[in-house]
Image 1 (cartoon, one colour):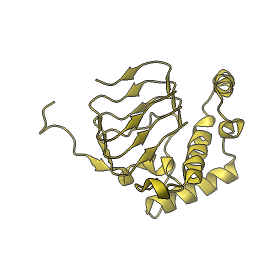
Image 2: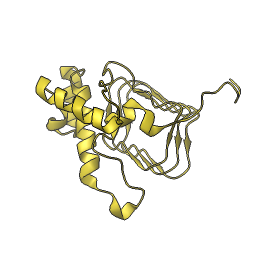
Image 3: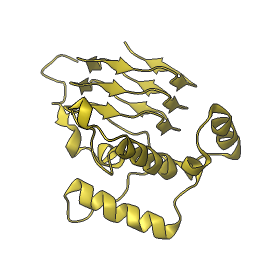
Image 4: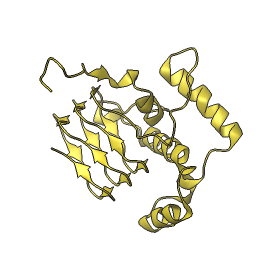
Length: 174
């Protein structure tokens, strides 16, 4: 595929998966103004959304790895309805449905202009960041990719942290 055939980069704030990953707000580009509570709330919301797709064996393995039991409890129907309301507000759309947790989160051809904290996020089906551009810090520390992790042609212009990230199947960083 030549440059003329490549899809244009889309802003992260137009990606439904990013809305879910930053449900309670984005990380500030000013390191002194970053709120660790926002990153924690985002991670818990994301992980609980995917928890309903985890097997008992996967839950047990994640608990052994140190994932908080609270993050492995699926949303109940009432909480899920509240999650839809929060996602709709985050998206700025009139209505917004939650991404299907059986799908692979697709961040391909996405430009991330802000710091991105995916610290401790679970990707039970894997994720694709193919041809994504990270203009600021990308934090994938302790993230768990149970399916494939596709970072082919991804660009990191500042720091990318993958300390203690686990890749169960494969990771493509070509």
